[in-house]
Image 1 (spheres, rainbow, N blue to C red):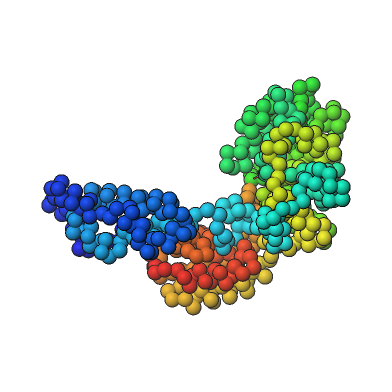
Image 2 (cartoon, protein in one colour):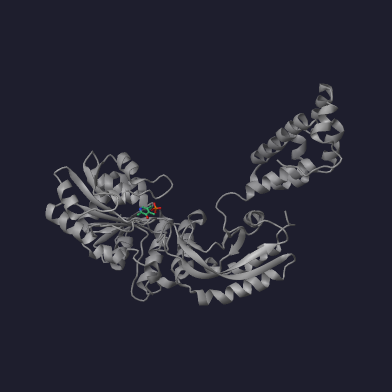
Length: 493
Ligand SMILES: *Cc1c(COP(=O)(O)O)cnc(C)c1O
């Protein structure tokens, strides 16, 4: 751990010149208090109530180990150690370790990056009504696999299936842990045991986090049959590849990249027709799950990003998408399609390993109810896409004004661009106004670090060595939290 510079301490060089005898080191080591002794320190003892005695002991030992290393490496004398102990340095080191650990884990942040679906910050924030339903399901008993009317056991996602069918126009639906699990389940159900899955070469995507289509296929025990070329795949390529070994024809939306120029791909409708003719299941992995329903404004700024309802109406057997990308719900993978194909997937024993828990189910049900009620635009993910540059201007101006009142801070409002995020519509940028913040002579990176470890943590954008705050991704209450985080910043580092 970096300790504050101590002017009274000899520099490393002069210390080496006056290298103390080994006995001096032993004497310095002996001055260190015992673990038990430190645990009696009232300041530390109160911390044990939060973290537990064993964890506290671990941090005390860790700090002592570091002090021993410093004594050895930096030749602290017994007197140096005494003086540092007298100034409470060791207790402060232990407290700093506890504080650092207290900042770990899943902690709410202010997202001022302007990236609406920020993978590092948890993708879609759910609607407050969905969050409340999730908390209620988590806290108590809930109706999960039992029918209220008859008292009989039923399927946990019967109601989800109904909502998905209404919202997407499909015959049925089920939910799993995420879209990656949905892909795995589809592959395994229809082509497990070495059957062929036909995919266009231009669609063998890597989603990130080591989710690469060919690797997933290998693990699912299916045989990948690539057709076409990187830029062009034709109907005849699929036709020729189809055989009695074919288990599934898969179309994958190239979410996070674009193939532009001399290109050709086969539409979902054409693949659906081919699958019907040859009696082979067809599947479309959409990824982001853009659902434009009556009562909500179409997210036309996302260009040709495929829509769930259009994919379903193409007649393809199965459509897969994430719950926490453009759909704006909790993390999930949603599978919609014909009753027959959905039922086949449900019967796969692997479904049991990747199915949804009660908390996610509660959040998804509420999210889809909002869609069906025509209230989808209230979902933070959609609202974040829909808010216009004209609406963001006054927010940026006010933020700039408030922050500039703080000592050492200067601000400027700039016309900028935000991003949808999560690999969704990678070539789309959303016009915004951002606040550029300068603080003393501090570098943007140093200010960003202080904001990240502050309370509440704030994530900003760094662009051309300047710190930018984009109001697009501020949720209810975040404006004041953001200003408060700046007010609480420590001295410039
Ligand atoms: C994002 C994405 C996935 C993975 O979805 P997760 O919900 O993150 O597992 C799969 N396929 C496509 C096309 C995607 O865009």
